[in-house]
Length: 364
Ligand SMILES: Cc1cc2nc3c(=O)[nH]c(=O)nc-3n(C[C@H](O)[C@H](O)[C@H](O)COP(=O)(O)O)c2cc1C
Image (cartoon, helix red, strand yellow):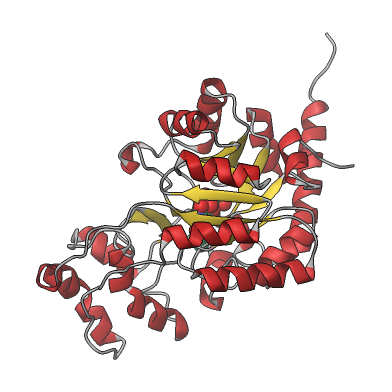
């Protein structure tokens, strides 16, 4: 038995499941190809990837599978260059951690803090993925029109009704309702992110009522029961991030995978201290100490540059204290399965959940 929805069909999928784009390693080309080949939508998180590399990795996936895949970019504006002198507080706040790992003292973060967005968008037009999504902001209408003319389906993240309405008014094809449970960066861009932490259950119902665009639900979905639940709420596809981190194809550091599999409670926290924007991850020493002291920080994504070498070194030596272990609130439901097996299991579980619910309905 198969599970399908109109949006999944227009994406070219055999199952209404998206592997969430995950910047910083997990969304490896191997994971994207494995998810797409299994009938879900594999997605690249290319926020920090240069255009040439975006093209190379996309070509690699195309050589492995002719199934559709997606690409995601961060579209938030870059901050003005920050004078080296005014970075002192943020540097001092992390200097002790650099010392502890035996690293040279951290250096001021220099612009550009991320690849050039216009060049990345041009690369998308060249690659022509089936699906392109944006996170942390919207996108101008000319670009949306141009992508649609290339037969690319364009989506964006919304964490509140106002953002969903804005994406609809700009001509997006669909949007992702990102509930407060979600791992990684909050996609908020119109409201204070701390006031846009509505859970997936409430958010999906609110946006389904407010806008006509098809909804993808994200945040805290780890198994087939979660998928069945968001389909019942009115979403057409479920997007899962954390669930795919432990897959052998994912590029997440082994310690990140191991910790997810050991969790028994929700031990996630929101923090801005890794990158400058709030994101959800497993609470570690860096998050606890930096959040508690409300340490000075730079604007996004400059703070990510400032903490970059610390995070790299910490993950390289398998020390979970000083790098971002992004994870959603349902992380304890993680399973270490190859992507294709996980997707098959998710679909079977979703169908079983729906059938179980059907069995509860009786003529009176
Ligand atoms: C490690 C990690 C990295 C992420 N990177 C991105 C990203 O680059 N772009 C994006 O739109 N969302 C990103 N997200 C958020 C996901 O798209 C999605 O909202 C989230 O994973 C859903 O919640 P879940 O983790 O509970 O499944 C990331 C999530 C994780 C866990």
